[in-house]
Structure formats: structure tokens, C-alpha cells
Image (cartoon, rainbow, N blue to C red; front, side, top):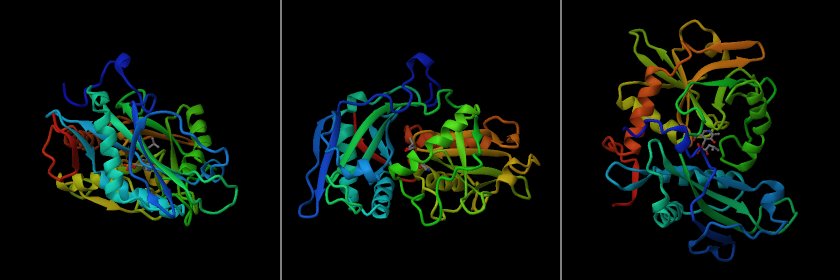
Length: 352
Ligand code: PLP
Ligand code: COI
């Protein structure tokens, strides 16, 4: 069985529904900086009801996975990329930096402590959720003077219940995820709270996710749910070309996005970072041959159709495309150790 053969529905873990036995904690104050990492049982946190994160949303998080590899080792996928983004998010929310090595070490400590709970089935992995919240008890509207950093872990497989299927997406006419100057490029809790009403609307319309457009013109594709967006077109010779929106400040710089651009290039598929309009995507003129979304939690997800207030447009034949499937398989092969780690992306945490 390859890493991506689907498990029977009864054996699926889903996403983020269960947690391992441990977590790692560290606290920050201006006087002492970060306290040493502490491994603790995964349990409820003691928090003042006045903790600032609860009121003003000073909270940032990350998502990365530890993969069970063919040789029996466990490895994190590019944790340094997540650590650096964590600090950019923290900066945007006026929170303190966490040294990159400390971030990675915290992830390693949890993976080692709960190595026996890393699921080994096809498409399964251990999803790590590092986060930082403002814990000072105060109702003052200003940056907190105390923070808690923690890493929890969740054994996962498919983000979408249907497994690897093309999804339908809803392009909400009146919801915006991010605006210039806002927090769209940060992985902060409030961005996700603000997306939930549109997501509920998408589900009510029989779609899986929301296709987010730009705030100014409501015309340019930015992201898809909590994932980055790509489409495939053809060059003059008929070869595939990937397109994805440029990181303009309103889009989260996905680890998967950056990795797929590098991977595609090594496979001879160029990527153009350019504006992609909703008209282009839904024209049905054959120019867009595939579209997909990507992120840590869901990996690579084919997009089958886009629904707007004026109707449903099927992308190409509505099924997972060849380039989409190849990129997904190649990435998984590196992550699960079925293929050489030629980019040096895997960070080994434990060996058998
Ligand atoms: N865009 C948003 C808004 C996200 O929340 C995520 C998930 O982290 C992504 C894109 C994909 O990023 P990554 O590939 O680093 O998981
Ligand atoms: C991820 O892809 O890692 C995410 O964090 C997306 C979502 C679960 C918030």
C-alpha cells in the first residue's frame, strides 16, 4: 500500500478531533523572557477570565506535521519555515518573538514524548499546533505583558471527509478575509473567526470551502478557505504552467505553497505568480485546465467547481487533474520517505 492509499472510513481519524497525551509549555514576561520548555500532560490550562487573548484576540498559531517515514523514523516538514512565520505573525500582533530553535525544539519534544501515538496508516500523520496567547489579566487595549506558548498534537489523516476528491467552492459576494494593511498575512486566531460565517454559508450551499477574493475590487482570487490557491494553464507548446497569486500582504505565505513552487520547478513545471481573476477561473473557455488548493492540514486539494451568486462553473472536467495529482503524490512521497529528500526539507526527530 502506498502512503496515500485511502484507509477504510471506519479507520479514519479525521482532523483535530483527538489529541496525544502531552503538550509543551513556556511562558514569557518582559523581565524573564521565555521560561524553559516544560513537558506536561495535555490538560486544561489555568487562565484568568481577564486574560487578554480572550478579549482582544491577541493569539497566533501554526500548523505543521510529523510524518511516519518508510524507514521507521519520524520527521517534521520544514519546521523552520513555520517558526519564521510564527514570528512574523507575532510581530504583526505586537507579541514577542520565539527563537526559531526553541520553536523547533518544542515540536521535537512533543513528537518524542508521544512517538507511540503517531498514527502509521496510509495518509496519516501527527499534526502539531504551536500557539501563543496573551495571558495577562487586563482589559486595557494594549499589548499584553505576559504570554503563554504551547504545542499540542493531534493524530490526523484527511481534512475533508471524502478523502482525495475534487471540492466545490463558494465565492461569497459580501465576505472578505483580508484587506491591505490588515492581518491576512499573519496566522492569527481572529482571521479564522472572521471566516466562519462565510464557511457556514458555503456549507449551506452544498460547497466545501470559501474562495476568497481581494477586498478592493472583489475580483482577484486570493486564497481558498485556510489554504493557498493554484491553477494550471498551458504554454504555447501545450505544457503545463502553474499560476498562483503573488504574496501581496493579504495572503498567508504557505509552507506548502512555497514547497510546491520549488517541487514543480524541479519537475519542469514553471510557476507564474500573477493576478488570477474570478472571470478567468470561471470562464469555461478551456484556458484553466486544473485548479487546486494546498496547505499543511489538507495537503493538495483539487477544486472541481466554483459557485457564485450567478451559478456554478465546473473547472475543466471537474475531476482531480493530472498536474494536481502528480504534485500531491510527489510531495507526499518526500514527506513519507518514499522518495529521496532532495530538497533537504525533512527534519528527523526520531529514528527507529
Ligand atoms: N492560507 C491560510 C489562511 C492558512 O491558514 C493556511 C494554513 O496554514 C495556508 C494558507 C497554508 O499554509 P501552510 O501550507 O503553511 O499550511
Ligand atoms: C493548516 O493547514 O495547517 C491549517 O492551519 C489550516 C487550518 C486547520 C487552520
